[in-house]
Length: 390
Image (cartoon, rainbow, N blue to C red; front, side, top):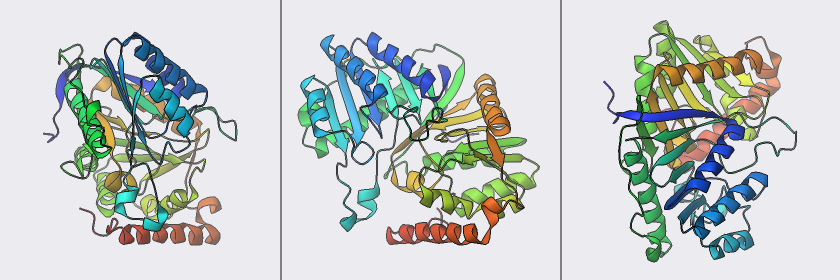
């Protein structure tokens, strides 16, 4: 039995990449009548961001109240002029921790708002790993980032709506914007509208510090046949790694789909330092090479699914505010599994101990230097993630 609050009666649809996500999101904004909440780590005023901003502006003109919560580091490229223009258009904007001062580096400064949540009229929610950014705008002209989101209607909205309103209230108080803490224009009805069973889990620094990690561990420890995890930044602690290894010993097939195209070299090489140990335990590792992998999803036993914003690394699991949805449904699990299996077999490279790309002496030195740098940084912040994981 799960300790997480699963509720029945939801309707959930899986969206693949930004090319499916943004048209559905824009259409939902255009039909909004009362209230829109958006939380995003990155908001770029590129082709996609311009279209979403325009749709939000039109919503305000229809009388819809629009709340936009941005992370101060992830959305730092959004100019003050752009923010002022959106404010003048009537969009309420708050910045989560607007400054990141490395001279005063510490836990507080590295705590980011990494969630990607949207709530439309307390009737439809979007949850996933997709930022408001044009996935096709990249230096290498690659296909869109490999990522997922879900669209949710039904009783689960009660949990999602509460979390969104709570974080907005906290940030509004911190910015002395009490006047922006307004009564709900509309509240979730909680009406059953489908047959999907799901739970909403967050990570914060108070009551829910380890919920997402524990959700993964619970599902991994109960797995009987298969675990497939796709994760952009994979640097698990000892407890998580051991759970995967014990699953292999029980006869469970464990496959990891990780980044092949490098976005941040430090995290990439720190993850590669773990490859040899994971491979020796029987875990299969693949690097996705068609484009940038940004997904944070898993499917277990072709029944349990998670989709969200949380990477499996100390920054997501210990510092950032994150949000994932857990789903127990064979149809959604099958759809996600087919997508991941296609990416593994057709768009990825299997990591093998004989491959010098991963296990040359040069890479060995670089990988372990990066790994110990990350561990040292965690120690400076007061965390001993790998050895003493809670």
